[in-house]
Length: 359
Length: 253
Image (cartoon, rainbow over all chains, first blue to last red; front, side, top):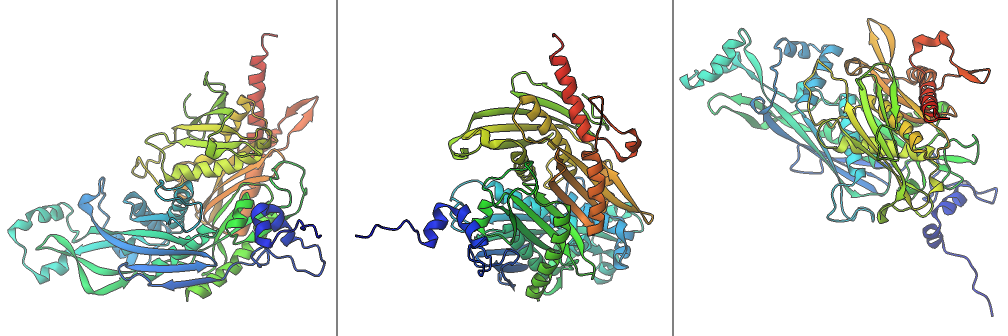
C-alpha cells in the first residue's frame, strides 16, 4: 500500500500559501533554473500592452487598454458649460487669447491650469466593474481603491497639464458675428455686457467639460498604470466638434461635420512596481539587509496582495530628456535613494514600450 | 492654538481618547486622536496583526476621494512603524481632524476640492506620530516628514522647505518625504516635473530636515546650530515635545 504523498499541485499550493509559493518561484532550488514569477515573467518584466483607440462610437474619444488580464476602457465625453452657469466666474482677459495663439510661456500655462481647476473642466471617474475581480462585490459604494485611483488620475491630469485650457474655451467673436447678421433689439443684454468690457469684442461664452470615465472590464493588478495609459490614449483620440455662439438662439451650437483634435501635451507614462520581501510580513525599521527582496515590475493581483511597498513613477521622455512627473512610494523602507534613482531607468524602458503601443 | 510657521505641538489634548496630539506647522493645525488596541470589526480583523485605520477629516465639509487617498497613504506608512504583530485581531484607530489650513489669496477658495494637496501630508504625518506616542502604542521607530518645493525664478533654482500654498502653485515640483528614525525613506510623494538629479537634491534637503544628526554631550542630545538655515529639525522637535511631556507628567515626583 502506498501512502498518499503530501504534495500539492501548483494551483493548490498557490491558493494555500501564496507567499512561499511566490518565494519558491523567485528563488528556485536548482541552480540552472531562471528565477521567475508565478506568472512566468522575470522580476523586471512587464506585461505587453495593447491599446485600441476609438473603440466607443458615442464618445468623443476612447481607448481600450489591455495589459495581461487587466483591461480598462476609457471614454471621454465633452459637455458644454456656459459661463453664466459657473459660480464666481471671472471673465478672461482678452489679451490672453492672442498670447495663447502665439504660444506663450509658463505664466500662461499657470492661468490655464487655474481655469481647469476652478471650473472643474476635467472630471475623471473610475468604476471597478462587478466581476472584474472576486473582491469587487455588487451593490456597494465605491471602494477606497476606486476613490484613491480617481484622485490619483485627477491630480496627475492637473499636475502634468496634459490638456490645455485654451482647447476647452468656446469663444464668441463679435467682429465675425457682425458681418453675418444684424443685431436685434432683444440682444440688448449681451450688448450692454460687451459695452461694459469696452473694446473687447471677443469673449469666452462657454467651456467644454471633459468627462473621463474609466471602467475596469477585468482587473488583475496594477490598476493605475492601465488607467493612466487609457486616459492618455483616449485624450489623444478625442475630437471635439467645432462650437460657436449663435446670437439668435443665444446658445452654443456645434458643427455636425467639423471637429477639432484635442491638443495633448507630452506623453506621460506610469510605471508601477511592488517590493516582495523574503520574510512574510516583514516590517520596516528592523536591521537593514535582513532578508532578500525583489522588485516586481507591473505586479498582478496575487503579487499585489503579497507586497506592501509600492512605487509608481510617471515619466515623460518625449522631449528627449527624461522628465519625472510624479513619484509615489509608500508602505516600506526598501526603496531608498539609489533604488529610486535606478527605477527611473526602468520607467524609461516602459515609456518606450507604451509609446510603441500608442502608435 | 493659532497657526504657526514654526512647529508647535501639544500632546494629550483630548481627555477621552487613549492618546491625542495637536500640531501646528506651516499654517496647518491638525488634531489627532489614537484609540487602540481596540476590538476590530469582523471584516477588518487580521489573524496575525492589528488593523491600522486612519480617518482624515477636512477643515470644512465631509471627506471625499481626496481624503480617502490621504488615508491610504498614511495607513500604509504608519502600519510599517507600528508593531502591528503585537496585537493580532485588534484595531488601532487614528482620527485626524484638520482644523486650519493656509489659504492662497490668489485663487478662489472652493469648499470641495478633489485635487490632492500633498503639502498637508507632513502635518498629518507628524500629528499621527505624536498621537501614537501619546497613546503609548508600541512602535519600532518614529517617523518624520517634510514638504519641499522646487521653483525656478529668474533662472535660479530655489529649494523651499514647508512651502506656502502660493509657493506650491508656482513651484515646478512639490515633494513630500518621510524618514524613519533609522534614516530610511518611508514615504516619497512628488508632483510636478523634475529630473532625477533634482529629486536627489530634494532628498538631501528633506534628509537634513528630518534626520539631522544630534551630537551627544554629557548625555543630553544637542543640536548643531550651524545648520539653522536649512529649516526646522523635525526629529529633535518630536523628541523635545515628548521630553517636555514626560517632564510635566513626572513633576509630582
